[in-house]
Each structure stands twice: as C-alpha cells, then as structure tokens.
Image (cartoon, rainbow, N blue to C red; front, side):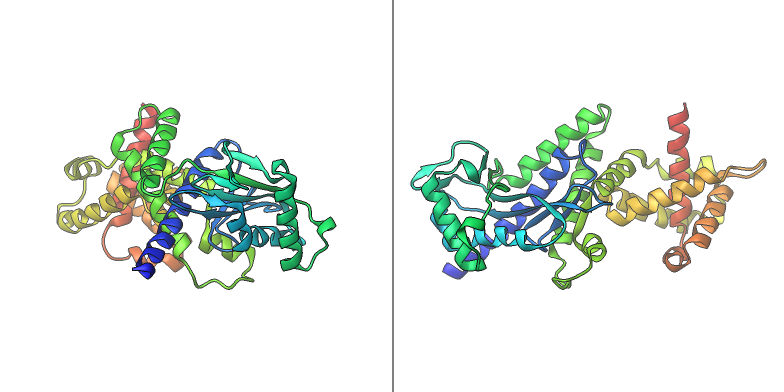
Length: 341
C-alpha cells in the first residue's frame, strides 16, 4: 500500500506541474515572449525570452496534504538542488523558486503569504540552509547568496488543480475575446493540457542536450499558445453541405471529401499542436495567392494544396491521400471572408 500511495503522490505532483505551467503561460502571456520547459533541468524552467534565452528561472514543485517543514526541504536536498543552478556560467539566473501547495513551516511557523524571499526567513533558518548548501556543494558559507531564492505557495490543490486552471484559462480567453464560444474555450484548454502533458512525458533527452532540442521536445512558448488560440477561434467548420455548395465540389469527390471533412473536424476540435502549425502555414499560402477569374473555390483550394506541398516536400506525402488540405483551405477562406464582412 505504501508503494501505491507513493506512486499516487508522485503522479499528482507531475500532474500539478502541468497545471502550474499552464497558469504561468496565462499569467505571463501579456508581458513575456516566454519559453517554459517541463521536467528537464528542473521541474519547471522559465526563459523570459524565447529567442534570446539569456535569462532563466528554475522552480521545484513539492506537494503534501498538510504542510512541509523547512527542515524537510533542507534534508531532502530540494533547496541545495535549486541552488546548484548558481554554478552554471550561463544564462543569467533571475529566480530560484520552491513551489508548494501547502504552507512551508519555518521552525514551526507557517508562512502566511503566497510569495516570500528566502532573505526574509529567520536568521537561524538561513544559517541552516547555508550550512546544508555549503556541505552539499563544497562551498564556503560566506559565499552563499540566497537573494535569488523564493518560496511560492500555489493556490492549486492536489484534487482540483486542473479544474482551477481550466477556470482561469476560460476567464483569460473570455476577457480577451468576449465573443468566443464555450466549445472553442474547451478546445483551447484541452489542447494546451494535451501538449504540456506530452512535453513533460518526453524522456528521451540527454541532460546535456542543446537548447534548441530541449525547446523543441520539452518546451512550450507564448507563440505556441497564441497559435492554438488563433487557429481554434478562426476555424469555425461549416456544415459539409455548405462546403460542397460554396466550393462547387465535383460530385465524384463527394464521398472521399466527406471523409477528409470528418478528420478536419476532429483535429480542429482537439486543436492539436500540429493542426495549429498546419493552419498557419496553409493560411499564409492562401494569403499569397488569389482566386483567378472563372476559378471555383474548390479549384483554388486544390491550387493552394499544390503550392503548400511544393514548399513542404518532406511532410506533403502525409496529405497525398484524400482531400484534407482542400477542405481546410476552404474553411480558412470562408473564415477570412467572414472577417472582411
């Protein structure tokens, strides 16, 4: 039973990390072109700028049903592990944070605020922290600087974290897009959770992997978030018969096009990362081209697919069978027409 309990707690902590990253993605959306990395150098790594990646913060997340004593954080090596990032020559470290879902007790007294700098701890507690770091890291106590270290008390709970962040994401989206539909909100939230969980679960990355590979395999950026929102809002899939009529789809292609339509509907509802990327690249092709006189919308969509495939030969074979790209191109065209009216 103890092993089952330990496994459950470990899973809950990992699951809460995903929710905490989602919350950070929302909170920082307006102020930072961030890159968030899940479960690589630390539980959560935050780069302030996705392009420069020269300023970073590291966070460890710990959970408990009651409270966590500072003595436990010290003896378990959590604080020393966080501080070990200070030995890295680059990038510049902005913050080192210990995140807990419960009070952090310092000599029996729980912290009563959501964010506390270590430098505000009691002197006796600071001495214990510095002595432990010095012993583990082979440093002089006098050389240890705790000014970058903080404790954060998250309001996420073990049982309700996903529901809480889903509510925060909904409020964020409705505030930015007052006309957004409930189903679109659900689609965006589900897509972000799915991507973050997949990024966290990816384990085939060496510790010394290049930054670019880490960002690709384990990272979530503001740009990715924006693309998911944009694609989910913009692709309002019409009824298939409406597509048939407005595009003048050849009758012989009706059945295979209907199968492709079903797949587009599924992907847009799930708003997977790959769908958002495809949406953006195809929309660019559509904007670069224009319908010529006498050309039907279906013929234009076919021409857009040909141009898209020409520019992306490596991935074009995925869409050789069926009419997925044509259907999506028509949906994008109709959405663009709606914006103009």
